[in-house]
Figure 1 (cartoon, one colour):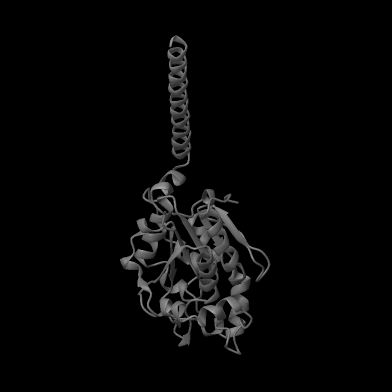
Figure 2 (cartoon, one colour):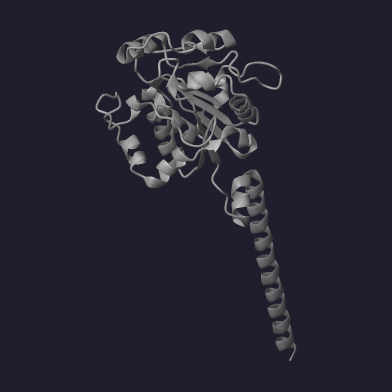
Length: 294
């Protein structure tokens, strides 16, 4: 009887020890998991709920006439479609806005089907134009006056000659660029798109681009365009001349060679010309996904 009682006591001790050990292991796992979630807030949040993709804003011009010539202009389409495609393929939620809202004017030379245009071999833009949902987006853009910058992690300003007529003087374009930059977001612009940065002023009264390395359509590229369209001195300004007046450091490469410059600790991205549009979009994606700001 005494042996049986001792055996029962030993079994009880073993059971209690096993329960205690299991409890300690469970606590340890919970502590490690909690610590990892704290040090990785995105992962910790994802355990409780799915994280919506970051929203990105694309803003285009609404200006459709080249000066007083009557010649049609607008956005240079691939400068919008190429960043759009890169962002769309990466799963980002995209809003396309324009200065006035509604239908986006398109420079006819940038449409791939135009035999007189200079953008005839562009499968990305062709795919966009043959996708009804995408065409609907540029036919029904949101007015920039209705945009709340706090909703967006980045903004992209495509170019086209039209941008030089309305971007610099539109208070909402200036407001959006400055606000997204100051809240830690990314501001990107392509070709004539940096016209949106000329008068964007931070809360301290300083130009957003002051002291920043930037690029944009060069004077040589403007001269070639004037020859192609047979219209001279119709733009209100030349970016290569105006950007330095705001304290920016302008850089360029040979005509129609791609150049993308990243400044402001990865939060200001500019592309020189249409050939840079794809890389600008890819760079925005890379940085939004946590890549190096180089």
